[in-house]
Length: 385
Ligand SMILES: *Cc1c(COP(=O)(O)O)cnc(C)c1O
Image (tube, rainbow, N blue to C red; front, top):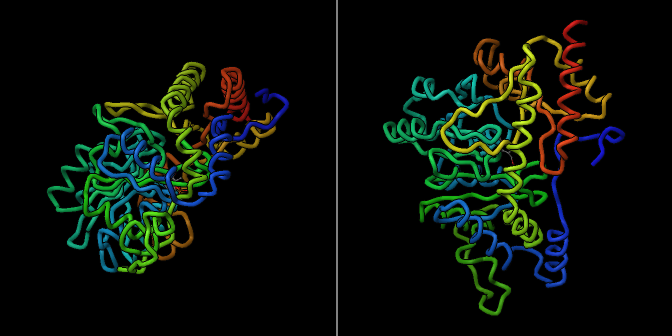
């Protein structure tokens, strides 16, 4: 893509002929909602992660929500997570009536600061929801150790980390509950979609039932030759199932995921090289033992010129974004919980100069060099103005 004359958004999906053909095949098969392709996608995804169960859903948000519901987390309970995440992580805690308890982040990884978790635990705490930020795993050894000691569940938000590793194991591989997002901007996309992975048989069964109205067995099969018109609702469940049109995309994308992630890593290294020289810009760092899958490339500008910088890049046809506006700054959460400046000093400090640069496999190396060049140039001018 030649972006010098064309706007380059901060993220774009990479959809090729095989995805298009697979979707057409699904449409022609007349099985368009949850069916054989969704089941196959679950099998392939579970194999890829190395976990025991995978349940395909219409979003990552659904995976997080269902995991809380299925774990019987409810009003009066507390769930620990971080303010440095997309609102979905915290919204689902509100949905079940529980209270989110925010713990500040680590300045290097932007992940939850494991040294501050224990101080936030009370007798009401039921779970920790770590968010693996930008494609880098949280310090799971420590989080699992704390959870075990205090008898808490760990419900992971892996929206950014499809294929990431921590100490040689994939994110989700050993998890109680780990949810991935296949939203249009994520490392693997089904337009909208998600997957929840678990190694707990009982949780898997509950998630499956809850994801389709709370209907007891294999609800999706009721219109097949093996199916039966009779069913029983055993819980007022949700409508969170994935369609075969989405799964068709997912099956193709999963085959390319490692290639996509390698390209992201290569582009991240290119940014590192070109921007590494500039003092005043803090670059993202891979710090965890394992493999980061570079969902985002978030730089921090030391000078207070972020808005001007974003505007200047836009004039150069470069789209950027900011991940994320911290939870405690959103009116609903700020007003409900009375958060004050200084409650989460590291998050506030990181947020101040934060910008996400474009990073995705549809970009060419030329695009990456162009963006990096403009970033360097604009940073100089906004520093001097
Ligand atoms: C994208 C995202 C989600 C939500 O994913 P959906 O599939 O859109 O529900 C949740 N958490 C984080 C950190 C995200 O970036």
